[in-house]
Image (cartoon, rainbow, N blue to C red):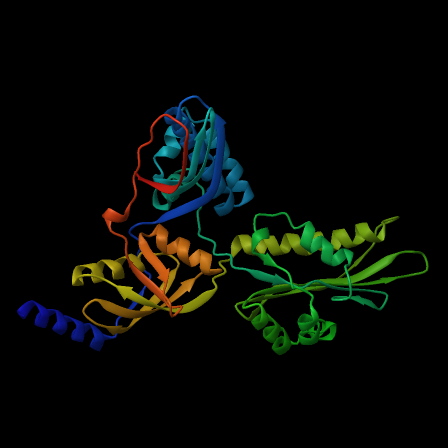
Length: 394
């Protein structure tokens, strides 16, 4: 009875203090690289798994560095690794664990999908020793709406144009997956016009962003005029909106075609100028899409509750959280978090050993994943097809 009373007193004190925790320290700083698929031929599943693990760790590490470093620094650190006596041994020091998904072994064919956890604290220290600056870039989805006119003919929703196709099919940098393009359906046409974009009507543009649940947009524009000598002159630039604020990228500029330059080549040259500026902006700025969500936090004891709070504070994407209500085995918390979509949310929480589920009321339930829930497995040397996930913690 006394223990229950003591616990209720603690809950009352916490509620009165209206806990508001900012994400100011990170004890466990891990980054997960998913979707690493390894296929090989082997007559032994044990040796196949060992070799596949080595390959997955190296592939994942290469992906991580290519995503997190600019091109110059990435090339420098590649040379450092290539000159190392044991490249894998060095990378192995930065591994926190890995998961093996959908492992299959049939006859001599081995196939598995890996997720590898990398210790960012150790990686940052190693990069610092090699004079490479590491900074975390949060790149959230950006809606791209290209507009163009040629001698008064406008191109936006009415069929394909080279300007639009260049942005959609030839944007091949590492941020491509974060670029979203409008559907171009009747709702788009009725919501946003060429004039709204040309005149930079922010109210109309923000309303259009609401349709896609986004806060960021790039509107590259190109207005071309030709003369009787088949020479071209263009006014071009872009409007960049990040978190519904206009950012300085490229204001209106003019450019003329080169001698004997075809119209298509001229358009491509204008596009590359904007695109290069845009990628440079992404390389040098953090773009955080702040989303506020409520969660039902479940725990078996006050110690579990404290551990859950600590875990939330240590998630780098969590900006802050408030405790809305607290009882003996459940709390309701409001969390501000930087994510692109719900899939990111599940990955971030699961990677931090937080169980996240949606209940029948479409609410989020979270809890600490216990050691008993971590699945381990040993395999026999025969045909094998496992739909389970194997978690290995280093």
